Amino acid sequence: DIVMTQTPLSSPVTLGQPASISCRSSQSLVHSDGNTYLSWLQQRPGQPPRLLVYKVSNRFSGVPDRFSGSGAGTDFTLKISRVEAEDVGVYYCLHATQFFGQGTRLEIK
Amino acid sequence: QVQLVQSGDEVKKPGASVKVSCKGSGYTFSNYGITWVRQAPGQGLEWMGWISAYNGDTYYAQKVQGRVTMTTDTSTSTAYMDLRGLTSDDTAVYYCARGASVAGTSDYWGQGTLVTVSS
Image 1: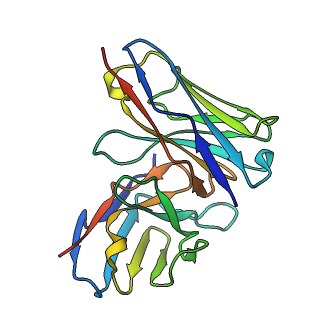
Image 2: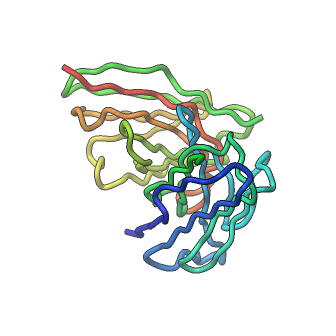
């Protein structure tokens, strides 16, 4: 199985400041169709997960442009350019539909 | 707009079964699959499996293989997840999500169904 490792596991951030979460996979995520199915999900407290970014760098419908994804192969990053209070929650990277990272808890300092 | 609406919370005794439903709307149900994911209290997300609403193909996680059955009813645009032989370790919120293929992206998610297993 593919193992997805996120760092950090917890990230205290000051409002208005940037935040960055890394995700590393145990093997290349490039699919035979040429796509890399690496997504980022946000889970606010008490809410279901919500798709933020898909195929590494594509923002999903309705997602603010302060969220951006990047990376290739085995190393991926989610960046929030300026953290807002509503961004508090747990962020997961996800390969395909199956392989989740452990989650990174974003909290406000 | 795409929506997935799940059935209500359940309380079950150890050894019982539970069947959670997930009704899709706002899209052509048979063109996509449904992923099932669960989250134990205070824990991360765990993939349980995926089913194609087009042809019924299924992929199950090894951890629940043999105890889980996923089905779809295209006439009602509803997916079902049946889990048998419940133990306290199955206490979790169960989510469905739309996904075009098992290798693709889970884009829209249901609201979750809490299943509590307790004697």
